[in-house]
Image (cartoon, rainbow, N blue to C red; front, side, top):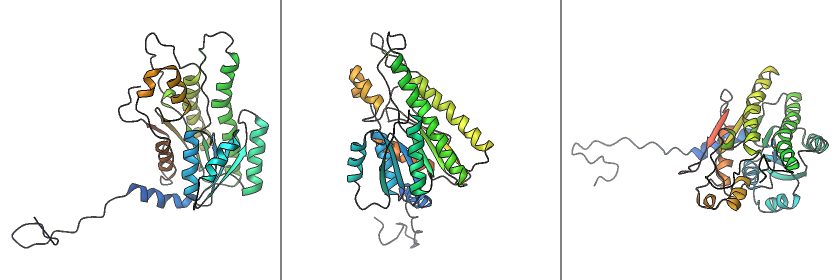
Amino acid sequence: MAANGSNGSSNGTTAAPAPPPITVRLDVVDRMKRWEGKVAVVTGASAAIGGAIAKELVKAGMIVCALSRRRDKVEKLRASLFDVAGNLNCVECDITEEEDVKHAFGWIENTYGGVDMLVNNAGVITKCLLTEKNNTRDLYTTMETNIIGLCMCTREAVKSMKARDVKGHIINVNSIFGHKVHQAVPGTRPLNGMYPASKYAVTAITECIRQELIYLDSGCKVTSISPGLVEGDILSTVSSNENEIVKYMPKLKPEDVAEAVLYAITTPDNVQIHELVIKPMGEFL
């Protein structure tokens, strides 16, 4: 066996030193320095994916304002963060209520000067069928949260970024259901309902926002991230309760989605990731 740097040949030549291993994570950490001290708004931060995203942004030194109706869950997350560079604030807000959204972004502007990043993560899914009687409220709830709320938050964030000439970033947490309506198992109750329609809308809205940002001569980027099934998220939880097979399907971890966010927001200035689809290995949706 070769030793002391020898390549094992008999001519006594010395092998060139091996290049240092490439550490993608360290590269991301280095690139995240541009966001230190910047303000990020994360909606739905009390949920699994939103909480993981908020945590990573705080660890990277960002000031994270978590928009949520559940202050207790956000406070629990904040209590779990020790020795981190940034800080986490809970801003109580129902993103389906316009006055709540305006008040939340107004508070952020008055307190921190404005918004540099927006992560539209808040979303709901209901169990009702599209053809089910008395489902009107459920239909409106899905559309008001997953589409209208997202648009109102984006409007306020872009307003803040544009006024301060900030090259910010908008992340829309989409879904694989925003690209394909999956076949229900024959004989089982379909679980799609209004959810795929709302996520298809997010796919279209992301492109519309991109075009509007160009029109506004803004340096802000926009990215749609579409994960498959994720442990603890609303899609996995609701589906598992209704369909036994979902419990045994492979799933991503919320931290995997957070890592995808970090990847998207650390690209060079001339690179914009428009759509990023991530799935767990072996997923058969």
